[in-house]
Length: 315
Image (cartoon, rainbow, N blue to C red; front, side, top):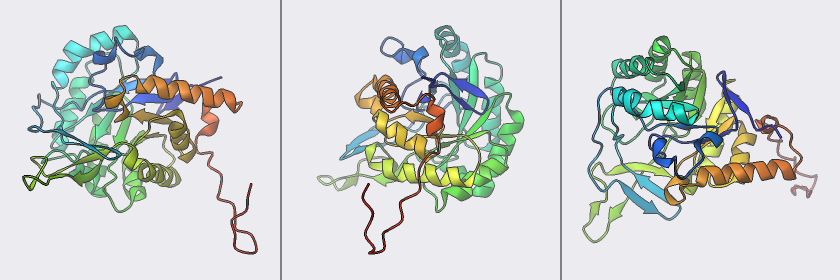
């Protein structure tokens, strides 16, 4: 069985990644997860200078997932290259560095810093985070600004460039095409949906910024639909994410058009979620006689037409 996939020229041993913001810098999980056994990891968002993030509380559990307002706390790109990247290189894991900034110049500066490091396979530019006052979702919801960002980041990058898209848009196809036309080598989708929570006792929002990002099983049907629409809109490889908690979830995203999947919120309640999803995906392929996982990508069959009496046909 061949589980290998390719994203923008980067070969992954399998299609299961750890999503940005849910797996630290990767090294935090090395005693829990066989990092080399994963397709790769996507780091926390890295900025030009260290960021303290948002005030507490930062997380709030929901009925089918969670809200987060972490605010991209991170050690900065320079410290990552100096202190974390060498260990990741020793562990032999494919590293995709997530890049964040409050301006186009910030993104470019981060990429130029990361260009000096060895052991990074690709960059994922975060054009979609809803939990900061500047940058982030401002780029991801405006096709013109997104194109400007992707074009500048691509010009500065020595590695393949993945654009992470926001779901908080009218049409995911429009922003997907904007990123593709501007030079993105691949797309990640989706980031969190805007939501909020209220403490009824105090009658105040639970988060300092009022809104937060909703993730987890609650968003899976929406994320799946958006991956399908992006797959129809552009020819780029896609990394699908949003509520994936099992091997069957991963298969759904592959069938919808994703070449790889990223596991996010599941890591919060099960640190071995990435390995579990990979194991279940492998079992699914074995049970169905699938020799190459690549044969699943975009293999969604058209819905069966209704019968003459208007009823859906049975299989």
